[in-house]
Image 1: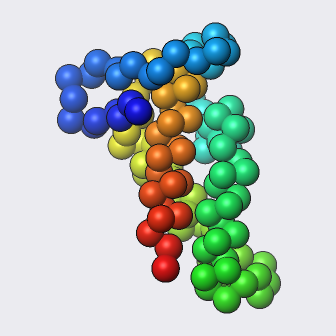
Image 2 (image 1 turned 60 degrees about the vertical axis):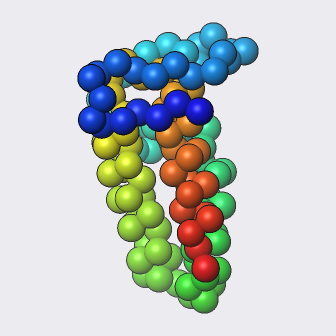
Length: 110
């Protein structure tokens, strides 16, 4: 599984071959977090993390509590993307970065 190390020499790692060739195209650099999540198809996986986090915090108790749970998750994901990803990464590589981060966050939930 590729890892985009922020301390590397700028070379991108190689993702496993993907049956969908368009997934390996370079990504545009000016994308919002929402664009990235949509592009990588990780919205359901991210939603799983949000729902588990809400459950841990006592369930959905209102809009304010929802945003108090969701906003830090989105902020941390954005930081992770900024640290591990570089221009020129393929969609597959970016998807793996996001998948790994979400999986790690799910595993760390009590």
